[in-house]
Structures are given as C-alpha cells and as structure tokens.
Image (cartoon, rainbow, N blue to C red):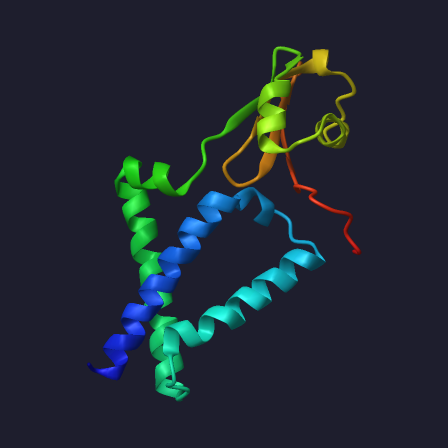
Length: 167
C-alpha cells in the first residue's frame, strides 16, 4: 500500500474516533479548559500521533496527516451545515435548565450541573433568584444562556467540575 494512503486512512480513522469520543464523553467539558483538560488534550494528541503516521516520521508524513485532519474538519462542517441529521449526530441539543422561574433539577442532574453551579451562572448575569429567570439554557457549545425578566440574553461558560482543579 502507498505509505501516504496509509497515513490518510489512519488520520481519517483517528479523526472520527475523536469525534465519537467527544460526543460520548461530552463536548461541554471543552467549553473552558482547566489544567487537567490541557494535559488530557496533550496526552491524547501524543497517543494518536503514531496511530496516524505509523513509522513515517518524515516532514511529508506529518504534513499529510495534518492536511487530512484539516480537510476532514472542513468537509464535516460543510456536511453539518447542509444536512441537519449530520449536525444532530455531532452536536448535543440545547437543554432547558430553568423555565419561568422553575429549575429543571432532573435535567441538571443528567448534565452533572449542581444547583450551586447554576446559581453561580445566574449571579454572573446579575440574577439572584430562580423566579427572576424566564429561561436558562445550556447551549451546544457549553455556554449557559440566561434570559431574565428584563428580556436580556446573557451567556456564561459552564465548566463541569469532576474534581478539584489545581488552577
């Protein structure tokens, strides 16, 4: 097999593995990166490097892999724009966290967002009580959008806390 075709096929496989892994484990965690997130990204990139280029450590091998990743990303974004089904497979749907002053605690629990984290986001928007929130949504990019009684739309980043951060 042509060594560059091998690099192309390996790069495509790694790219789609990463898309699926992020879909399963949650892109919301990438909305704000802490120290452990950066370490994870660095380790993942190092661990999949050899899977993409194999034993080819040449400049052309690395450039081929990088080009394929950029091309796949470009094509996937075009497909997501053109076909709603593809976009729905890749992106999570926005989730309602508060509706007309009532917190959706079942949804919060499913998303791993504590009441304290939701209240922190509300305070960042200058809102003190649930009753003052018309709508709070966890958006597909990990932001929490809040529409208060004054019809103001504001956003904050939600960072899922799975452990205490050193940063």
